Every structure is written in C-alpha cells, then in structure tokens.
Length: 430
Image (cartoon, rainbow, N blue to C red):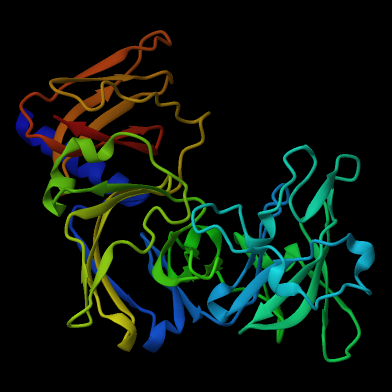
C-alpha cells in the first residue's frame, strides 16, 4: 500500500469509528411543523430528532420550574389568564380578601425574555435579600414560603383566588385556590417526581398535574404562542398581545444573525463568533411580517440564527409561515456536528485547538499519555487532513501542528481518537 492509499485507509477507518459514536451532518435539512388551525397546538422540536411532541396550547394553566433552587411560576396567558396581585394585606387576609376593586390591582405577565421570570415572579422586594417574589426563602429549611395572594382573571372576570403556599426543598410546589361560586378552598401539589427530567411541572385546573414537555434532552425549540405585553397609553393598561413564535429550551444558546443573507451566514466565520444567549425569545416572533393589504405572511430573508446546545451546533433559518389557516412553519438548518457518548475527562483530556478561527496552522495540545489520531473533516464529511497515529514519548504533552493553509475557507470538524474514544471540535478556516 502506498502513502496515499494508507492515508485514505486511515480516513475511512476513522470515519467508521466516528460513525459508531457521532452523527456528523454536512447537508441542509428542510423541515416543518404545524400548529394547526388558529394555532391550537404547540410543537416541541429537537435539532437531532425532529419533532418530538405536539400538545394543545390550552391544555395547561400553570407551569412551575423543576429546578429546586429557582421559583419560576408561569401562567398560560394564551388561554386567557391574567394575573393581579392583592395589594392590601398579607396571606392572613385569605378568607377576608376584598376583591371588589380588583381592576386597580397591579397586573403581571410572564417575561417573554427570561426563563426564570413567570407572572408570579415580577414582584421581588429588592430590599430583602431573601425575597423570592411570591415568597420568602427560609435559609434554615431551604423552602420558599409564600407571602403573597393573587387573583386569577379570565376573559375579564375574576375566577379564583390563588396562594402559592410553599416550595419544598425537593421542588414540590403546594398551592391553594378558591373560586367564587361558594366552593371551599382547595390545596394541591405540583410534584417534582411526576415531571421527571423535564424543565417544568404543568398543571390544569380541570385535570390536575400532567406533562406537557418532552424530556430535557428531547427538545431544543418550542413553536408556540405566548404573550408579548404592550402598553396601551390611551387606556393606561397593559395588553397581553398574543404572538406566534419560537421559544428556546433553557439549555439552548442562540445568537441572531441579522442583516445578512442565508448564504453569508453559512459561509462567514463572523456568524460563529461572539456571545450566545439563553434568552427565552432569542428567536421569538419577529422573523415574520404580515402584509396588511393581502393579509399574507412573509419571513425575513436577512435573519438567521446560530444555535448551540452543547451536543449540536446549527445555523437556522425560516422559509415560510402560512398563518392561522394551517399554522405551518417551514424552516431549514445546517447541523454542523453532533457528538454522542461524550468521553469522560479521565479517559480523554483534549485541550481546545488554537487559534480558532485559523488561517494557516492549527495547534492541538494533547495531555493524555494514550496514543492519539487527529483527523479533520469538511462540511461534507470528507477527510481532508490526518495526523496518522501519534504515540507520546515518556508521558510528554506535545502540541501537535496541523498545516491547513491549503484548505478553502469554511467550517471543519476536528476529531481526535484515543483509546477507542472520540471527541470533536468545530474549526473555522479563514
């Protein structure tokens, strides 16, 4: 076997090794979701698995975080709920709370930007370090004890009183409600154990607790409706302003790429640099526009997004929005690399290659004593450079040099195989 054939054989072997542990994509994926007529559904979508779950947008009323150190409590405004806080006393007034003047009470909505600010989390007392909005944190019991009373309004009518009683140390939320039809007060609990490995616990006043979301690692994007509150200066009131948009999973980082073509976003290294954000609405609702004359929707061609969830990176772009008749949203994205079965640090300790972006030579520090092999793949999954097998001498930690000045500009994936394990890093060649 000559030198060229040997290099090809090594690349083919390495590709087969990667295939057993990773999925590397080099082609654009065009896909769509449908929210149904009048956007009656919401759809959860995974960059690696596609659509994972659809559920009715009006199925749930409350959502509470499963992160026990947080206390986010959200209300489903799309269903028509509005939240007012009782301003005239404490929880001792539960039985005697006068609701006759409720329209003058402070009104709150879920934050459209922040995962941790639900409608019930907008009243924090900045002077009290232990104040957690609807309750006060007890540093001895590690519970959040409710100290606020609320009124739930629907379709302009006061429906029930609401008291978040306590968030237990294990994340369970105990709350109390009472309607105005003469029924007695009712206590219920959102159980952490029912939610499992999900971001939120959900509750329906009609059905009790149930799961809306898929598991945490089974979704990245939530195609849905939500409120973007707007101030009406003529009426001196906040309006919920329900919009159709895309919310990010709490584990997804997003960076909008604005005022650039889709092709530019794919080709330019700028798009892959700078901060990414865990904001709930980094994608949001502003990727589309309605023509008031034709009443047809268009998507903004000069807007795309960089997505990163630790295992997958992708460039994302909208293609079509059909409006309320079908609720269909068409999009495309370019998954760059997805690594599964991540290697334990004790087995493989790979420092980041540098510089990145790179112009001519890539340097890769190796700290493990195990023999290693480095291979560089282009966006089509083709092997374009290989180090061959490197055996470290006397436990040394060399820096491997990989010349790449001959390669065209673009995105590459650097793979390192060591002791039967594989790790990867995205490289931008200038």
